Image 1 (cartoon, helix red, strand yellow):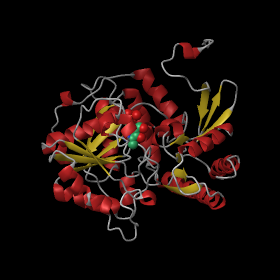
Image 2 (tube, rainbow, N blue to C red; image 1 turned 180 degrees about the vertical axis):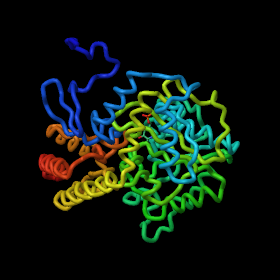
Image 3 (tube, protein in one colour; image 1 turned 30 degrees about the vertical axis):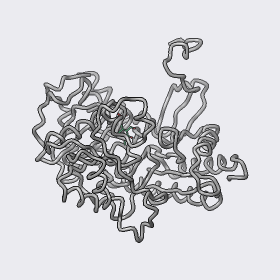
Image 4 (cartoon, rainbow, N blue to C red; image 1 turned 120 degrees about the vertical axis):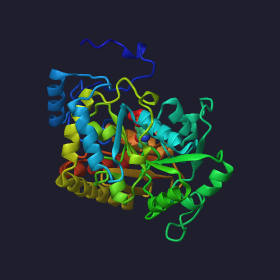
Length: 425
Ligand SMILES: Cc1ncc(COP(=O)(O)O)c(C=O)c1O
C-alpha cells in the first residue's frame, strides 16, 4: 500500500516517527529495516511476543470457518476460553463473562456486577490505579491528570493511598508500619465516600502507576479488610495475568483470592482484542443486556486465546519466566549499584520497573524521559510510568524472552545510563 507523503496531515494526533512493518518474538522492524527490541510487549499485551506461530495458525484456521459470531450464539473457541479461564483462575472463580473486548469495559463490567450484587455504589481505587480510558473508568483512575479535563459523572470514586513503600504516603517503614495503607482506608470510606461502598478494584502490582509491588501481607490484609466490610475485592490482572509474574496470575503469586478478576491484554498472546470478567458463583445474575459489546467474545480473538492459555499454563513456560526474569532483574540491580540516579529497581517475574530520581531522591520525570530517549536511540522500546508523567521506566518484555536477549537488553540499558549527564548518572 503506498504511504502518503505526510500521514500526519490526516491524523488527529501527531504520529510516532517509526512505521512498523513486521514483528517476530520480542522484535519489530520498521520500513527502513531497523530492528527494535520490544520491552513493553506492544502495549503490555503480547505475552507470547509478536506473531507467535501458534496464534497465527489458530487465527488463520478459525478465519477459514467463522470470523465472527454474535454473543447470542456459542462457538467452539469461546466455549473453550470460558472453560479454560474457569479452570485456570483461583478455584473460587467459576463464572466467566466474555462480553467485553477491552480492559476498560471488563473493569466496568466487574464494577457493575459488584454494584448490582451489593446494592452499593462507591468504587475504591488506589492513588496510582489505572482502571481504563472509557468515561466511567476515567473517573475511577487514580491519577488526577487523567480525570481533570472531564466533568465528574461518576462521583462514587474513593481514592486511597497505595502500598508504595519507597514513597510511603504515611511516611512509615514496611517492617513496622502495621499496614496503615489498609487500616486507614476506613477513614476514607467514612469521610471521603458516600457511605455506600460496593467494591475495591486494584492491580495486584500497579503497572502504569510505576510497577509498585505491595509489601508482604498487604494483599492478604486487604482481602480480610474487604471481607469484613462486605466490599467486593476485584483484581485487575490486565498486566499481571497469564504468567507475567512467573505464576499464571498475580493472585497465585501473592496467594490471595479476589472475589472477581478482570483480564484482557495477554489473553490472546499476540494481540487480538478480548477481555473477561471472572467471578464467584454468587455474582451470577446480571442481565446480559446490561453489559455487552459488539466485539466482546470475538471468535477470532477467542481462537487465539484458547491456544495462548494452553501454552502459558505449562509449568516449564512459567518456570522459564521466573528464570529469565531473575536474570534481567539481577542485571538491572547491578546497574542500580553503579548509577545513583537509579533510585529503585523492582518487580516480579518479567514485570519490572526502574525508578530514576535526582540525587536527593526527588522524582524526576525529565530524567526518566532522557533515559527513555537514550533507550530508544539504542532501539529498546520502553515506556515511562503514569502515562509519561512518572519517573519509572516500565519493562514488560514478552514472556518468551531468552536469557541471551535479557542480557542484550541489560547491556543496552547500561549504555543508555552512561549517556545521561554525569551530575545525575
Ligand atoms: C491495569 C490496567 N487496567 C485497565 C486497562 C485498560 O485496558 P484497555 O486499554 O484494554 O481498555 C489498562 C490499559 O493499559 C491497564 O493497564
